[in-house]
Length: 138
Image (cartoon, rainbow, N blue to C red; front, side, top):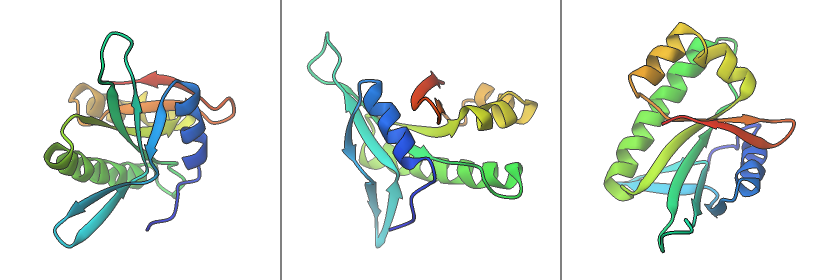
């Protein structure tokens, strides 16, 4: 099993604080002889429905020497997990969790804006100090 991201527990606590129940830590995706691990699986019941929302969260800190290299790796991982979830668990929505600093450095810049406009990924933005979720993109 891979090492946990620096902000893994922060995102986990932020999700719980936001009303989510953690169902998987990690969420295992089996494909052939390979096991892949999405950091977290969670669900939240909706008041008006019997079934709830189900999500998968991949947490990324972007601590490498290059933000672009970190983005390339995160995007590749996101696409792989997205496609596997579409086959194995199509009702679960995948999000990339990033801190508010990463959001500002990457996603409020033209390269991140392009990815969001093209709907290449969904992003959950969190405040690591306050341990709260600030934004969800669709």
